[in-house]
Image 1 (tube, helix red, strand yellow):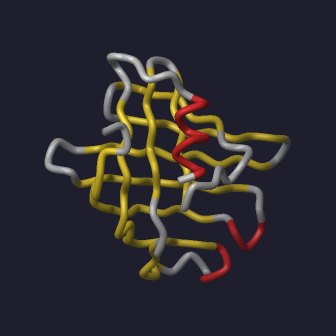
Image 2 (cartoon, one colour; image 1 turned 180 degrees about the vertical axis):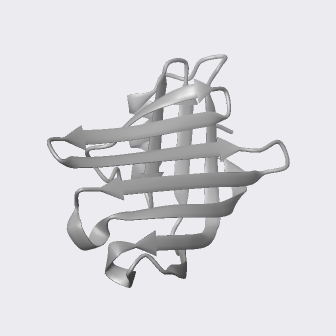
Length: 129
């Protein structure tokens, strides 16, 4: 519940606010570590995705991974970006009307962690209720 309090403090609830809990995120990954061969990949934890006006956040098991700056692209799309000299990471999150969540992530400049991921998950709750 501490993470929910942190999200509530970070974002004031407005008419345009939305907050989803997402679980079962799984799909495919291609990483340098695996010779860029396709592997099954996924996350066991829970994501919290928040959109409030011009601000957005994505938390994993209540924690901010740090470094990623998130912005809403629309009322159901979040883009994340981090960059520093020679290192880049980009995420997209799309929450479909049927509750399916589409996620992509590309990481470059981090050696064995360089990768591209395409995954799907399911909305399991609305954290603003």
